[in-house]
Length: 147
Image 1 (cartoon, rainbow, N blue to C red):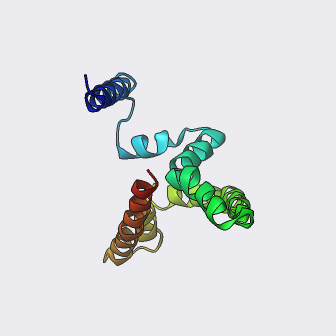
Image 2: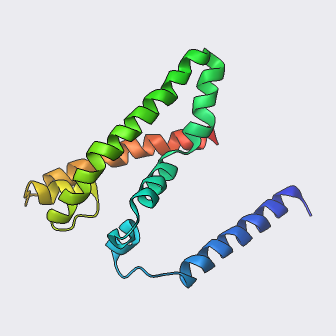
Image 3: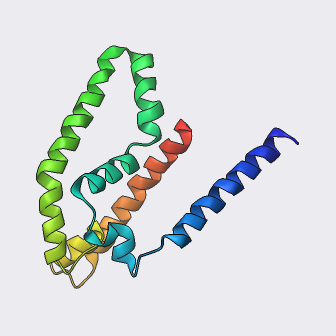
């Protein structure tokens, strides 16, 4: 068999296992359960889950590439990332979690903005969604480039 055939077989087996595990362990009753773990995740589990979702190709390929291409002075990028992450965990995340519950149990940031500011025209929700769509498209594109 060719290399491409083996890649497709391994890919299919991997996805079959992942889908099988998802079906077997499915406990989500609604979108909030799925996206937020029913708001029952341990603080550390939630934080580590968020960080592993955030730290993708740019951390594995982009940061070492920047350091290699432009020198060790770029290592300060990692220091800034660590400091920013800790500040986010300590000051933003706790308040945002509390306020999303108060704001009609909002699940996403666009929903939170709409509920928090009582925007019945949906302008805040739509603006936030467009903003995220544009910048996450660029983020996903950079991930494909890193791959």
